[in-house]
Length: 252
Image (cartoon, helix red, strand yellow):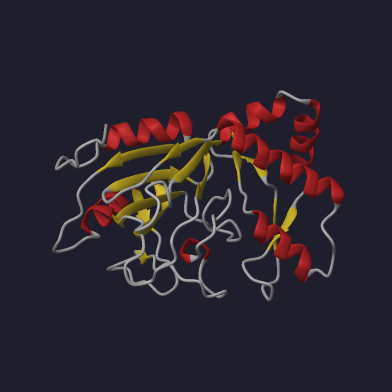
């Protein structure tokens, strides 16, 4: 059964409780025809301090996706799946919360452009259940790795699994950024690191929740407490799937 689009604004307490419990919240809400980004901007202010990405303004700190086959396109615009990640993983002061509001459905398969979501706690518990997973956790908790946004960006060093503000463990992850970090250093990724990253991805696969998207689909996710991915999408720029992306740098 397809849920009806809601005219009622998402409940902030429900969102905060879901972020605390599992790292993500999903729902459905209409976009305003006059101002499609209005709901997203409102939620960003209520959840904390809006983060202004490069190319955006404080008045409109929203990225609008545009599917493309260009090799230089942003990961969220490319046709292939993005891969497990938390947004802005290579940044020192990355946004704590990301929001995604789907404005236009994928014109292809109804399941194209679905969200894959994995609670960090569930991922870490899954890893703790096997000897290989425990060994991987030890590597990712104790060894800082190089993260680069691009091949030309000097790496910043972070631990993939780190303690967050409430004493729990959170995850900072995007495999291509780590691979680019090693590339920038002129090094091959250490075999133990590659195996540990693979263990983390397999753990996320094992605990994932898949949420198909359609116009009005809304996601709020804590970039420490959960990982997310977008499945392959149809790369038609003019009428392909479009989502509005917003970010919050600190919780309210």
